Every structure is written in C-alpha cells, then in structure tokens.
Length: 226
Length: 240
Image (cartoon, rainbow over all chains, first blue to last red; front, side, top):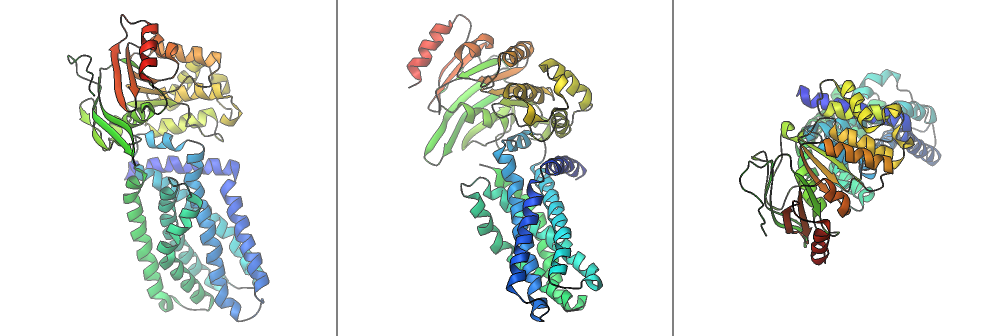
C-alpha cells in the first residue's frame, strides 16, 4: 500500500507541476463554472424564496460539468502528447496511475469549488457561514465520489474515437445517485437543516463514494487492456 | 510459421505462437522467436507487417490474443511484476517526455518511477553520455526533436534495462543525435531489438536479422556471411 501511494504521489506531483505551469484545466473549469453562474443569475430573480431551492442544483451543475472537463483532460492530455505509454511502461502497479490522476482531479476540482462558491454566494445573495462545516463535509465526500467515477470513465473514454461525447454519456447515468444526493444534502443545508435531516442522503453518498473508489482502483488495470 | 535459429541457449525472450487480432485484422500470426541474451536483433518489414505490435507486446503495452511471451523463462503474457517490468527499456519516435517539465524534472520523474537509488547521479551521467548536460534545466518544449530524442535515450537507459526495444529511433534525428545513438548502441552489450525502415543502419549493428510480413516471420538468420544487398533483395521479394 505504501509503495502504491508512493508512486501515486510521484504521478500526482508531476501533474500538479504541469498544471501549475500551464493552468490548462483550472482556468477552463473556472471559466465554465462562472458562465453557468452568470447564466443562472440572469435566469432567476435574486432574493426570491425559490432561489434557495434552485441554487444547490446550479452549484452541482457547474461543479459536475467542470469535474467532467477536469477528468477528461487528465488522460486525454497524456494520450495527445504520447506520454501515457511512458507511464504504462514503468514498473508500477496501474492502480497507482489511477490514484495519482484521482488525487489530481480531486485537488483541481476542490480548488475551483473554493474559488467559485464565494462567487455563487455573492451572486445569489446567500449566507453560508452558519453551514460551512456541513458544506465542507458534503463537498469533500461528493468530490471524492464523483472524481472516482469520472476518472475511471475518463480512462475508458480515451481509447474511443468520440471520447468527448463518450465521457458524459457513460458518466452521468452512473454518477446520478451521487449527484442527486449532493443536491439534496446541499439544499437541506441551505434551508437550515441538521445532520439528522439528511442522514439517508449522507449514507447514500458515503456508500457510493467508498464503493466507487474501491471498485475504480480494482477495475482500472482491466480498462487499460487493449 | 516457425524459424528457429539456435536451440542451444537459455533465451532472454521467447515468443510462442504469438497472435494479435484487432477485429478482423490479424497483426501477428503465430510468431515464434527465441532471442538469446545480448543479441542485437534488427527487425524489418513493410508498413503493417506487425513490427510495432510485436515490440509493444514485448514491452507489455498490449497483450496477445493467443500465444505466450516469456522473459527469462517467466510467462509474462498477461502481466508482469515490477521486477520484470524494470528489465525493459523502450525508445520510440514518441519520447514520453513532458513538454512543460525540464529535462532534469522528466528524468527525475522516471527515475523515481523506476526506483533508481540515486537518480541525480545517474541522470547526470546519462545526460553527459547523450550530450545534453548543458540543457538539463531547459523545458522540453524548447528543445528540437533531435535533442528530445537524445533525452529520450537517456530516459530509456536510465534504469539500466536488460532489454532495449527501439521502434524507429532514427526518425527525425539530426546528425549529432544519430552519431550519439550509434555510439550508445555500439557500447550497449545487452539484448536489443531494433525496428527500423533504414536497412543500412539496422544492419550496421545487428547480429541477427528478422523480417516480418503480414504478421508472419518470413526471414530469420544471423547476419554472419550475409551481405546487405542479399538481405535487401530478400526484403524486397517478401515485402509485398
């Protein structure tokens, strides 16, 4: 396990250095999320009660599509630049490639969430400080679960001709339980609900996150076989 | 089709009835080869003969549809452990280098993936050997193709592999890089499989010649006693 994580760390570190120097994915994700926010801002009247019911969905539309962009590019960039074979040739467990990419996706999606969430609050005149801890837990669980599935399906999609279309087609149906749970728990939080009010959704989110994380690590090697 | 050269040794690489099928297309058809340690094998063949497929199988990048592949008598057909994986080095037209990282960062990355004990020292030695020590802090995207290939040579040899697989390594190289590569290959005394369309360069260093055509081995002989013209004639006859 230590060996697996050590190699994952090397791949993660390399990806973060490349991302720091290019800002390729983070900027795209941030701009996309901003566009979603601006469009929804014009679509709905700020200050209405309806806003609290709709904003959680808007947040997770923005973050899930930004997350798909992130996951898609994590393998596509390796394939386009012909560096993926370099990773496959290395004498490392292929699970460490998956974990390195997963940690990178979680980091970048979290960074974009941290940058965009305050803008959502400003644009839609929301108050989140009383619920900050709950939101962080929900975002943390959801990001890991969504990223696990997205990273796995991104690896499936890179070997197809229509990979940009294939990823959302494959990912969204499988990720829908997690997305629904995230929207419901976020909405309950914004409405002032307590942990007890969202126990079932948190359980669903946690179980899906753990199951998909473990399954993704185990299945990744077989997905790469030609 | 099996063409055995010599069965009086313990092979470093053994291919047993290797077949690879992509849908209806058969890239390799029952290839049998035994390659002794230290052999420099030049693998020729027309486009689509299966040369790169064969190399990718030995490298572990793809798995055969049928047949078996042995490295040092260990069946690695469906996967290999980290120890065996580190025995193979690959140099191809793709350099496997990250443009946004420096030369040194790229080699440090691969050094750590290959568990090299003191990567910095080894990297320095390799960069001197390939003539790129003055550009170690340059980002790869600033280098010419020839320079990148020289760094790729350093990357392929960094972990001191027992088997070196070369897929069209001469493509796009400048004169300096060609000279460097030839010098390194001349000094390299382990198993080499070289795929190239350049018959003269391939024959220069090889001690065994194999020609693939349409997935079959159609020619397999030691180079001793054969002239380049004879091999070229045979190659032309069979590369239709």
